[in-house]
Length: 435
Image (cartoon, rainbow, N blue to C red; front, side, top):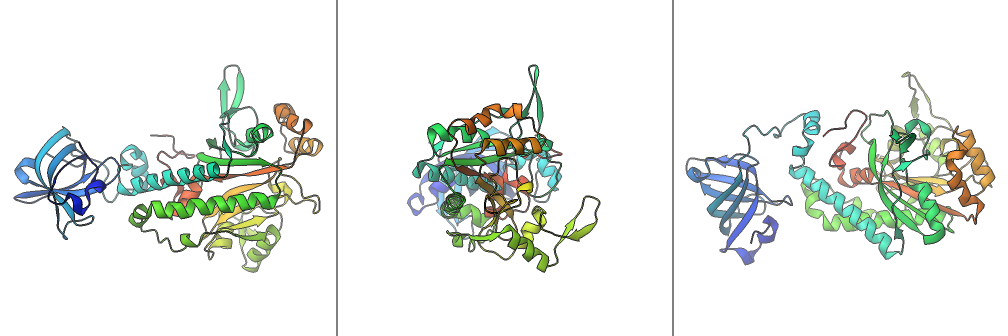
């Protein structure tokens, strides 16, 4: 029976015959011997040696099965193990013009993403992504939150109508969901603390290293909570994910050359600064806002934080921080106003350290039907589209809140990759919908 490369890298297999299946990752031919780096279906690799005449027909990415004797050789790459091959079976010979080489443009790698995924770098990121999602789910299970699923096809906006993707749904106009939050709010009345992991869609005409039009959105909502409760949940969840992921995926993080020294420090509590303090810090550094026309001006109170200002705030931090108490006008209609400090919302964003910016956004939801109806109207939204949502305020409304976490943004920080497009297998952006 075939095994995987990492399974046999053990003294227990030295001198024994093993069989491996996979693809040719690299191939180097000499006059008498050909050295094959075999990659299995989990990204593990090992060197195999065959007589050149026996391997003359092979090409990069050909799928093969090799059988041979495992031996130790300190000169062998990937841990000093190699296989002296004695039998070779071919499943498929790949065409010789495999387009993914060592040096390729970013656009070509995206155009050929279905093939780029075979690179060890992308395999490592995919494994880290799987661990992050696994440990997120594990934290919620251990802490007795119920996982739910919300619809993707919706009638109303959550984050503003300008970023909605419209669809023709039979004879109606509908949208792709920006967030599961409104539905999670409905579920807390019957299930208590709930969470979901669903795709969300934002039609933002933005080209930055941290924006996708389709992203994996982890969201959580709970009844009978205050803002501090929500912040504590977030810092516990993020710490749990980070610490378990760096332990389980140490090999993959090493392959990515990710120094995990700072990640080991990610433990509660996280720092908290007010929005007012954040603006004052930025002003003290002479931070400038770039307008759409290219002009610059000093940042002022009332401005929302963006990718540049968040980077400036966190570039020297080693742990995430919360920015608390944003002006209510820069937050969505559902954010609860601070009754003791008018014009401020009971909301907070978590900013990742080293300039990676916002990874979560959350807070308390407005539970007063009169106030939230006014907010909906002020946003230019149609209250009729939110009839069912407003019912939640009519029949037993309670203090409640939650947050949303962008999985790809979290991965980008943990892996230290520059562009968020590398954190998802098939990215969707303003200019890319294939492959």
